[in-house]
Image (cartoon, rainbow, N blue to C red; front, side):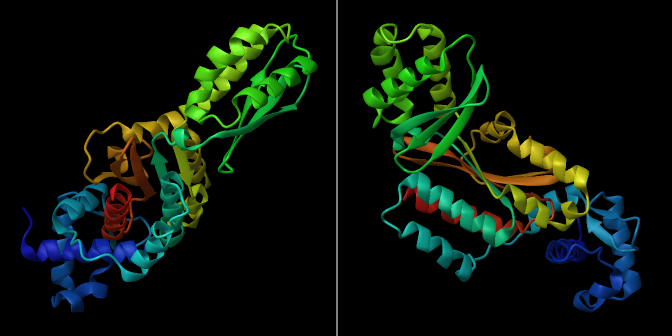
Length: 329
């Protein structure tokens, strides 16, 4: 247990460091605490011994440790009303009646990413909202090509496929068959239509029909099951913790590209807002993940905000609460 003064001191150091990532010294907060610098240094030493503060090599000041952030979130963070400016920017998105729910979520996360300089993620299937407009194929060499899927909402996905001993003319015939017979189908129903409408007749038109059918079937299956949308990966570069540490940036970037790793964010069944600091999350020990689940009709998923451990916890939690409430409304 901490004393009232130690609680106040830790809260002050965490919030001061969140605003400005410079180690906090005793002189800078002695007036606010109405204590002498010597008293503050002594209390800082106690908090350091408890593992809640750390010293840096370059300064005599202290910074919050991972345990310090956890203690702050669990015991000291005060959730107030959401910032009016933040709320207004998000309200504009939610009041746009022309947007589908998936677009509202993505645009809201884009707004949050721009406002906070954090990375945002949505996990959950929205493929039933997208209709197949057309597919295109771009040859790379004799065996490799890129399949491009375009939906009616302007969503574009691409996937590399390899076809051995298949004539380009047969590939074009298959593409035309798909575009003519199943264009306008919800993306999550395309695989089923391929099986029951394309598979029975494709053999009449192309030689290597099994290989072609399997290739396109897997392309659509992967698209349907993708369920991960990341907004603002590059925002990590704007954080002081990463801007001067190229290896740390590369490491985080690689993990934000790993969709299987990101899907682990969804594993927790708890519907409340959850905060995972450093080693508590599945992504990276240098970041914090704050997430919540949402459900509206048939659509459900997880929204998450990823940033440095020096994150504006109160602000982010408020944003996610607002987002969840308005999505489910």
